[in-house]
Each structure stands twice: as C-alpha cells, then as structure tokens.
Image (tube, rainbow, N blue to C red; front, side, top):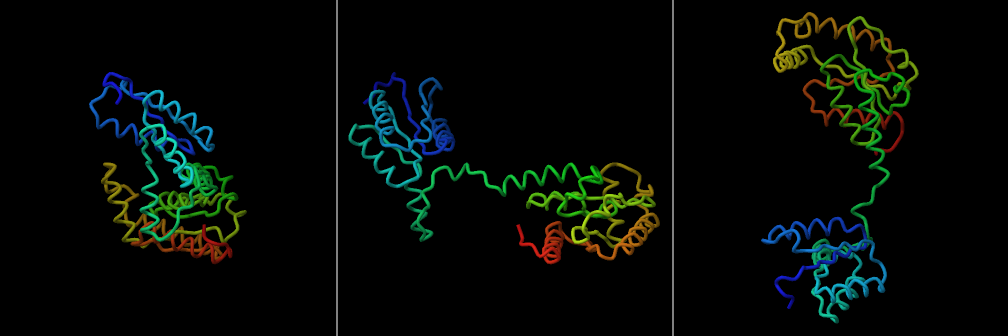
Length: 280
C-alpha cells in the first residue's frame, strides 16, 4: 500500500486523444478532499501497441500508480488488464463495462473504432460553412452571394426570414434572404438565381399586424408608427404580391401561424422536389 504522503500518479490511457478520460478522472477527483498537487495525471494518448502498454504499466508499477483506460478494442483492453494484474497495478476500465452492457441491451456489437468521438465529418464542415454564409447573407447583405445560395428567401419584415434562414443553415443549406421593402426594387443579382431556389414568404395581414405590434412593444416604440399600422401593412403586402406576380416561377409559401420547423419542412420538401436532389 502506498504511503499516505506519497504523490499519487494516475496514468490515463487512450487509443484516441484521451480528452474524455481525462475529464472523467478530473471530475472524479473533485469528489475527494485533496490538494491539486496530491495527484499527478499523466495522459498517454494514441496507445495502440503492446510494447507501449509494457512501458506504461512498468512506469505505473514503479510509481505505485493507477491505470485508467478508455481503450475501445476489447482485445487491447484484455491485454492491458492482464499486464496490470501481473504487475499488481490497479486498473480501471472506464468504457469496457459500458460497451458490454450497451451491446447486450441493444443486441448489437460495438464497432470498436478508436477516436469516433472526435471524428469531424464532412456534414459538420458543411453546416459550419452554411451558417457562416447565411449570417453574411442576412437581410439583403452581400447580394453577390445570391447566386451561390442553395435557397433564397424573400419577404416583407417579420415574415421569419432570418430565423428560418438560420434553421435551414443548421441543416447544411446556404441561405440568403432579401427583404421586400415598399417601393424599392429587388437586387439585380436575384435575376441570376434559378427560380427553383427562390421562396417567397407571405403572411395574412391580421397575423402580421399582431406580430409587429408585439415587436414595437418589446423595443419600446410607439404603436402608432407606420410599421405597426394596418394601412401601411396592407400597402406592403400588396406591393409584395405585385412583385411576386411578375415572377410566377418562384415558390410562394404562406407562413401564417406556422412554426419555423413547419415552414422549413415545406421549403425543403418543395426544393428537393423541384431540383430532384436528395435531402441532406
């Protein structure tokens, strides 16, 4: 038994980065009344060879230390456990019992592939790039991006263009949105966008009136501003309808009373139907 005043060394062994195992060990250590200097954590990442196991176990034996493992391959876990037992080194397998229990529960054998937790997939990069593109292309900014967008959303103020854009971007779609502003022309770049990518969002006047008045209350603006007046809202809606009539190949979606998720599902269903492309 190690002396109570001895520095306690813990070897954290992983076939990947070891970050998860280290966090778990540090979390467990917080449950003990110990100074930080009382323990020495030694991370051994990317352990794949039996000779490396011999080195780690030998070091742990000399230091009277503990070996904590998150090796995912069953064969490697058994080899490390046997080496620890032969040298009298205490050993904790953080993942073996979990994988075994889950395999029995799911009736599926684990893949036992190291590093899956830290694998960054192509879909992750696609989503990150889509979100960055969408933020840069919000509310009519960067009109040169319109031709590069997977989806272009049009609509007057408070038709959920921005939240819908971000929601779609999180699914990996590059989205640009353009506000329809009373008496202002559309950006010329919009003419270059294939019509199957353009989706105009419309809303019923009474619903928009309520949304805008609630918005004015939240930002402490007077309710009698034109933004929240029915006559002005009707002018905007009629202006938008006239614009859309001149572009009959664009898809129009009524967002009245719909959650963002519902509208997104409608947009994606129609987009993939029109383009003949599979869903992300």
